Structures are given as C-alpha cells and as structure tokens.
Length: 168
Image (cartoon, rainbow, N blue to C red; front, side, top):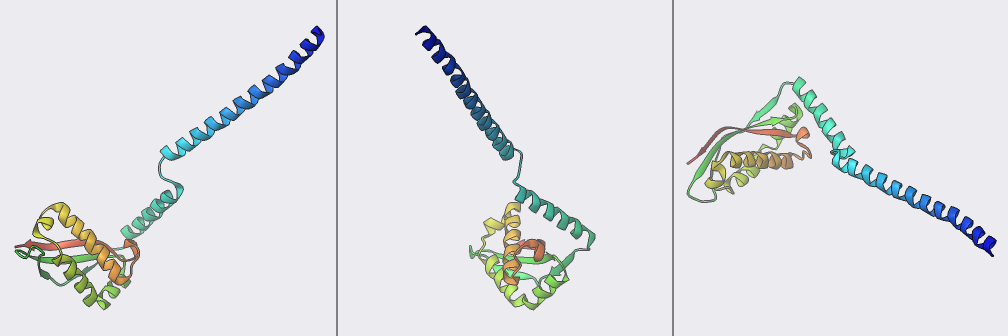
C-alpha cells in the first residue's frame, strides 16, 4: 500500500508541474500582449494617421517649391446679424493651383452669394476678437471649397486672408 501511495504521489507531481508550467506560460503571454497593446496605444498615432501626416508633409514640401496662387475677391459690405453694425471686408484666397483659380472665377456668383450669406449671419461681437476672425476665415475656406467641390484644402482653397476688415 505504501508503494501505491508513493506511485500516486510520483504521478501527481509531474501533473502539477505541467499545470503550473501551462499557467505560467499563459500568464506570460497575457502580460506580453497587454504590454504590446499598451505600447502601441501610447507610442503615438496609428499607422494610417502617420501615413496621412507624411503625405501632408510631402504635399507641403511640394507647395513650398511652387509660388503661391491668390484670388482677390471684390469687397464685401454686409449688414451684420445684430442689425446695428455692418462689415466691410476684402478677402484674398490662397488656392492650390491655377486650375482652382479658374474654377473660382467660373463660379464667382455662387461663391459671393455663399460668402454674403455667411458674413451677414455673424454679429459684430463674434468678429471683434482675433479668434472670431480666425474662425470666420476657416468657415469661409470651408464654404468656398464646398461651392467649388473641393474635398480637401489641398485641392481647393488653402487659406483665407483678410486684407481689410472694418466693422462699424
């Protein structure tokens, strides 16, 4: 009987060691996977965003090589939404290339209409601060790109410049 008990104890020891080894290996795999996931999350942008940033940098480098193309719009004079003030603004648009400039010229009535509606929807209080003017420039850029059908700024209006901005 003592021999049977010794034989059972000898069989259970390797079985326990195998279970312990399996548990340790599984734990190690989980820890490594969690560490790898944390590294990827904390290391920065996902690969698709990094590729987009690289493409944007390449486009910016190409842009630097070409002289800028500007389209000066006629002066805008609009009553503001507060009905106590008016805005007189001269706007120049920095565009991606001469093709975009031609497209702007072809659609100028639509562009002016969209901008008149946008400008007249603002109040003097909104436009007095530098942040207000910056936000307006971004809205103008988006609106003009919408009218000419440009999906990205790199394909249409890149920047909006106010060459005169008077609120009275």
